[in-house]
Image 1 (cartoon, rainbow, N blue to C red):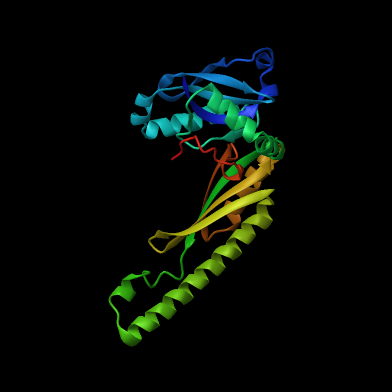
Image 2 (spheres, rainbow, N blue to C red):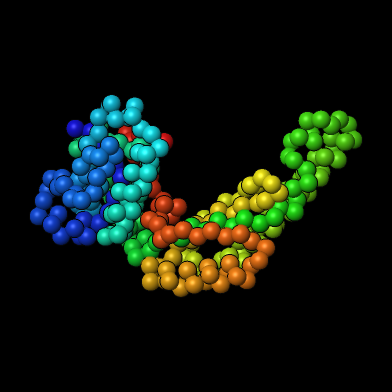
Length: 248
């Protein structure tokens, strides 16, 4: 039987699983296509899975991605979780056990590192003051001196953009004081720049973080900010990818 994998969690979070050596139905949590989910015991860990068939792979759609995230979020309410990528499957029980066995130290270290922590997701939209030259458009229509000038101007604009993004991300770090962070920056169109920030924080600091966000939205008039979370720590799971799993 093939398994579709959602996440790794702590076996101790499910006392009823301590008496079982085989997969046990995870009651009240439906997986992809409404399939029953199971808690698959593996040493001190448990893998949340549902049955998977070759036909299921051809039926994957955006709703499946939402269902994948929903199952992980349901597990996150009870325990530390290490999310699998959407589309991860194991061909049978032995393949799943081998994967956990070969990566057990790695998985256990991640569980220990992320226990009691959550991810907050912050989007910060600001004016891109360096957006006067659409990257590439000027270059393709320029020759000789104009071409070199446009190269220099675009390079200068990019450096200024990166410098501003670093300053803004540092300001966010000082304000929210996360345990860890992952940041991406991109042009958002209409002369805007978007910072996509994931902050890892302690669960007991969630309310304080939300209060700081409220203060930031009031004090930082030149930014449009959007907050979501707490989420499972998607951006902070450093996992090895077993060779026999499939991922998007």
